Length: 338
Image (cartoon, rainbow, N blue to C red; front, side):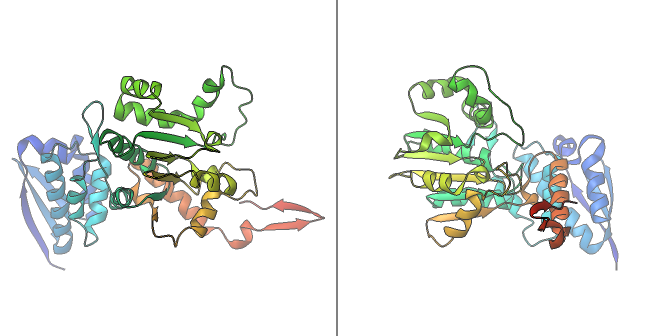
């Protein structure tokens, strides 16, 4: 395999952003693609096998363009650009970056960062009901919230309704102090956080007082018909089949529904079936319902989160069927765990 070298010019004002602190991004690209990179005088010399040099050149060209567009390059951008360099979609990262959904209260653009997230956002625009299913950190709730707020601002819907089942994550919290709102607030905090960041606390409180934005537990949805609303059901893996059916049959005219969930993080009682699991089996053939499956490659939190998700996925895939069986011993069921 022939060894070649090539030189890429980097504008001096973008060099630190693209190369990272102490050239961390540069070193990561070197380790991943097995090339040698020398940064000097506003240019980077890349030395190595021809195919790897071309991949490194593609990664740097994409990162430079992202930097020129005003993006602060993070490790997630570098990791994703590297992963795309092994596919024919290496230039898609620039197309994804063009899709700005809205801006936060601080002016930061909210946009998809991976191909999976871009597909998710596109399906929300096209379909009436979208299921966003994937592991933690893939932006399921945040992107849905951004789409809801943008639709509200554009007058496409009259109100936003956010809901999730009030179930503890493997703990029994007992009786919580305060009135009913104070009791349910801890369960809905992630939704509040996204609202405050994108819309701002003052705007949120103003619209809440007028009844245009509602954050409530899933139990409050029964008996209602929701017209001209953008409705988000978060943590749907913790719904029962009856709750999921109840929620989906609340949809009225002019409404859009987003259901998000992570099938690997269920807090339902042992043996209880998830409403999200059942909905995936029953509703897949309905035209105006879309299922978007996000994966560990779509994780946009700290890179360590992506590694954690991958490690858990690998562990689950290695489990033998016999390890997950429930065997009867002396008339009672015993779970065999690793």
